[in-house]
Image (cartoon, rainbow, N blue to C red; front, side, top):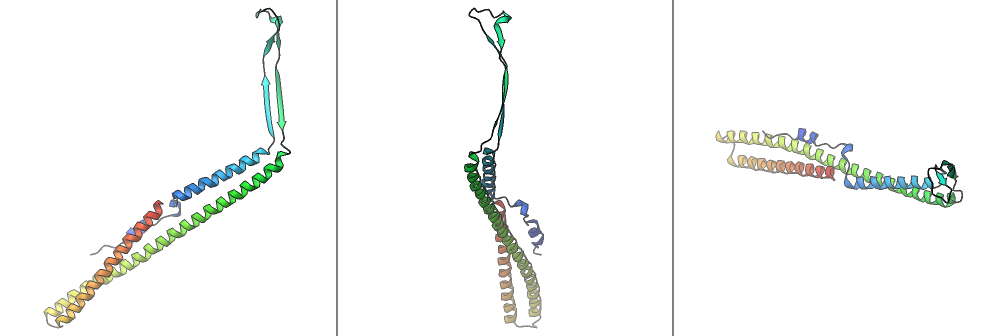
Amino acid sequence: MIPSVTEYSAANQISGAEMTGSGLSRQSEVVALARNRVKSSRLKIAPSLSLNAFYGANYYSNDFNPGNGDLWHGNSFVAMSLKVPLTQAFSTSRETARLKLQEQIETENLQDMQNLKSKELNDGRNRLSISVQEYEMLRQNYELGKENLNAFRARLDRTYIQEKDYLEEQVRCRNSYQRFLQAAYNVFINTIDLQKMKAE
């Protein structure tokens, strides 16, 4: 008996989570880079707070006598500064808007690539499903054709039919077998194509 491919087909279904091709990965990295540029541009106009400190002492004497504590005078300080880039905000806002637009373009490109990949995978699954159904139908037809040919042979042996009728049935069975082999080949090719799409 010729094996069925229904179970094999079910095992080869591809989920949307496996749709991680090299092109999609690259485009995802481009989108992440564009987002980081937008964040970096926004940080340019943010106020910055800095804190500086110094702790130390200076020695005041022409004679070198480091052990004399009266000649050392402390000179420590803590300074805090706040920088607000008011004028830079105008030029940076234009840059931020341009980078935001670039981010949107790259995000839409990624979405288009994902949609295209999803469509290709769905088309591949549909082709495989149709070829599996055709394979099953032609497999059953071929098995029925073999049974009919055996029945024709038995009838020919008992001289119930003429030999030309048996030969005609033999040709039909051979044609059915060729169609069945073509269907099996189609299942194989569509499975390989689907695996290639999965790996891309």
